[in-house]
Length: 180
Image (cartoon, rainbow, N blue to C red; front, side, top):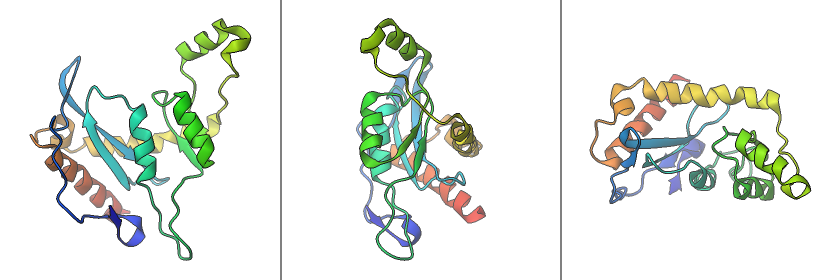
């Protein structure tokens, strides 16, 4: 994907419609998930659409790979200082990927994993450390999703095609960028 000014994606070709149209079965029926990477101001420069039953964890690495922020001198910045995530992103693979790229992980450990670690004793590994003060700033991400869900068509997924739904999410992001 080519990048335009300010690191925003430039549309160069028509996106391909996935065979499942971004729909997935979950307990509540058919659903779709919108994944966003949000900057410190709650503005989403990168987003992806997946079926509703898909896990959040495998999407994180592609979201990080798409991110570029233009700088006045030199190449674009491709990694954040910290990554704030909820308890859906606790896997060792993600923590290893973040550590390898020099990104501080602000992801708490779920209670069930704490119990497994304690039960294994000395073989369970060290407890996960994270900054609870930095974790409180995760509300910026949640507010970004609230702004996304204010659009009735996005909250209920009226669109049949995933590319149309994604373009509505992109339009919502453009409006958020213009209001800044």
